Image 1 (cartoon, rainbow, N blue to C red):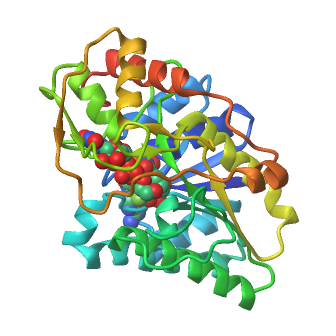
Image 2: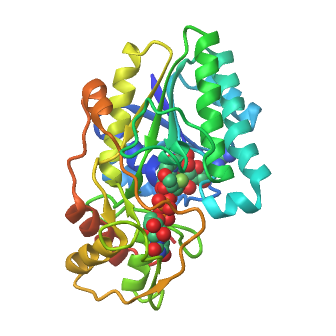
Length: 338
Ligand code: NAD
Ligand code: UFG
């Protein structure tokens, strides 16, 4: 039996595939490489101690590809990472996002159904809580109106999963709402490799440190937070990957559809992140205060109690490890996987 990991060549997917391989699970990756490099597969194989990773280059919207994949592999569960994820881009090309993220997931679920595969884990996001949810975010808060087509695509897939679970009793599904993933494998061999100019905070800080960006733009210092800059609940990608294994193991106990926050339960401001990175790297990070970025919320973090109780999962890596591993990855791979 094997686990199908869609988007398994991407940032979070590759760390999850490695964690699965390290505990002896069989894995098949399906990825169209629209935001990933083939080199990732070599790195996973190396870090897992040899052993081939089955990699299928293909698109989740391609039914023929999915049918072939399900008929030629004994798939017991699907962890579904494949998606487009740039919030700003999603506002410019919303239809592309809905097609890839929503239609793609519907096609995948249809083909799973056809092949009798009913175990499903989905990468959702804290963005589904929208702008008005009280903090910390709790899974029982009704979700509505995320602030971008990207966020709406995640919310729509959660609704699709919930409705399908009502209709098909064999379907067992967990949506994992990630907070802010950062960090890299401790070896420095695998990490986040954003295409073009990054949007997320830590890749931007790291690019300033390696001299690819002249300074960091800090978007707003007049928020009602500790120091006026936005606060987020950053989570080490290896902790996040381990959360997927715990969710996979818990699926057999799930009746229908469940949702869990995967976050650390505390938050750091932009200025605190800069300081922590400076300590880890020994590099000075110049920054300039810029106007607020559209759509940013002042602060949010996860209520982690449900994941702790049901999944027996909590983060074990803190801000020191997040910064150390990010810096190690950039030092060893200043050009990413290329
Ligand atoms: P990523 O871009 O590194 O990984 C996504 C992978 O999916 C890429 O390798 C890409 O090539 C592949 N892909 C995209 N569309 C595809 C398609 N139609 N068919 C096949 N493969 C396709 O992103 P990531 O950061 O690893 O994110 C993984 C998942 O987690 C995504 O669903 C994302 O929306 C979600 N998520 C990410 C974050 C974050 O900050 N990184 C936060 C919350 C949720
Ligand atoms: N920031 C800067 N300068 C930068 C980049 C970011 O000041 O160059 C700030 C942002 O304004 C924000 C904070 O750093 O206050 C974090 O920004 P990120 O872009 O790293 O993360 P977001 O919280 O905006 O977005 C993340 C994920 C999205 C997801 C969203 C909501 O990247 O996928 O969380 O959960 F939708």
